Image (tube, rainbow, N blue to C red; front, side):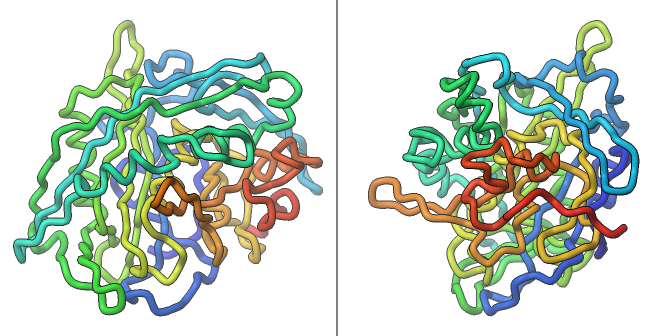
Length: 382
């Protein structure tokens, strides 16, 4: 299902046709030739599959969030106010540290040939990574997610809230959940170039498994569950439409007094080097999804439609900070933690989506690393 990522009123179904593929050209090179690494958008839904109305935002029992607005007027058009919700506290209101309790839920996928690809084998690497351990970032000695969040609002942080932070708590580790993949839903093989074990799985089948786990594990809505797999990627309908490597979403359950308990969550696959031609390895996909969770935990931050750099066609109207730069050849960067190297992804900052000039981001930038996006998002051609 090829097409641009434009999401208007969040009327998409939870599991139906949410997989979206970028319309712009992707990096082509050897790797294992299994497909283009992309990400899926899964909007907030209730357990029955219906949408949660936007006017109920104040009645959601979930992780700590704050909300704001910005105004945008296109060159030809009327001014419009856009609202957004992010994880943590409002940086305009001063310094505060928010710590979100976090859970890692490893998944072992057992394929019909008997091979198991087990996310448990990569839990220690994830915990030791800059996603959970502080490193010398461009916005201070802190975790990756906090670093990019501070970068998005850096001029505000410097002026009003120098000690503003949004951190992930050191994660509790759930017992491994073993899921048997039926032959019609996926298969395992050895990468032609990487020689790594690889699993390809049907998107709809896999998302049903994740939804079932979210519904059945009695998770606290005030925590962030991370579902972790290893070298396992998703295809839509057939393996030629590959590969989704991560998504973040939220599932709402009935709460007291007409409210909703909303479990936000992330799934990503820890991946070996060389599977994809693009620089995606170890925590790249998980960092992408965590950065997007920080900036849009409820998948409701609709912004003026934007094109990916290098294109004029509308790509999305959701604040997906990782998607904005996913076509760049140098999308990840290296962080050394002791003897290990990790590769989190660079991301776009808030001012790129809100078309603020100058940017309120770190050093007036529009992306965290600063050399990909030279100005705010362009007006796109519908």
